[in-house]
Length: 315
Image 1 (cartoon, rainbow, N blue to C red):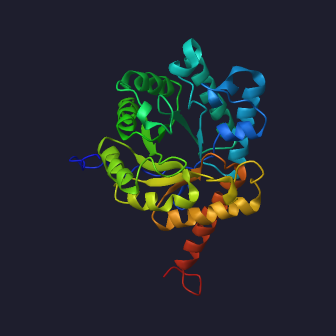
Image 2 (image 1 turned 90 degrees about the horizontal axis):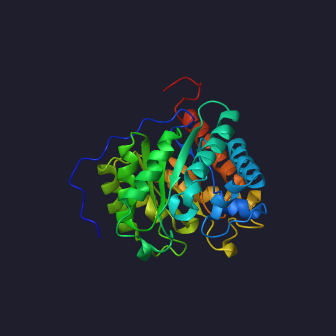
Image 3 (image 1 turned 60 degrees about the vertical axis):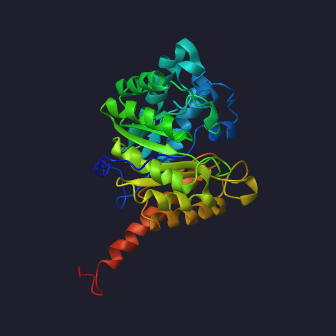
């Protein structure tokens, strides 16, 4: 367990241009969406394998565009595994290509969209025991490459090992690019407790995180983690996975409007807990992001109406 941070938390980041009612809608996953579209995602590259040929790149581009049409304001480049450890000598070229594809789609969608560069655990995001003792140099290398490629945000995501997450965050902050960090409790919500993530979030804020999130934890079990983020002192939020296939929230065959609506119903509780950043992770897709956008837009309209008296004039 981490000790409570002793330094003051970084002041909350100003809202990005493409937000509704101060809530940022993220995109959804690339890896499981690529697989759903028939693109192979073999180990160790996983989603980054799609960057190796034209067909894969076309699929990545199409997914980004679908998320843009769904209403996402932040598009995460396909760099989760585009690093030297998994990709070898070609890693920098793949990372730059991933950022370019995300930037192209966000630019086509209009102004106000942002591109995030993904920085993931060096090993398995569900195996904190595999986190290497010396991770700083590799995280620094990717953070600097993504900053040079022109990302708007560096997103250190899906970390089950708090120590490694904080190292990655420090290297992201050192680039001068806005840095976010996201922890995962894993597919069974047993890798980190809500209390663990609450302490980690405050430590991350003290080290310069401009936002703290929880991701790739089942949507039905995410609220307890979001509630613990509320004390971190910076914007916070969640992008959950669809949980077990039996829950009917996503995965293959679960991308329809009813599944997306159920996911948005869960996300509504995250917003009620104070979250200002929401999106989707493994097993969700563009339909889920569209449902989140509708939720956020609806909340904004409801809030605007509540601020006016019966005559329509401001109270």
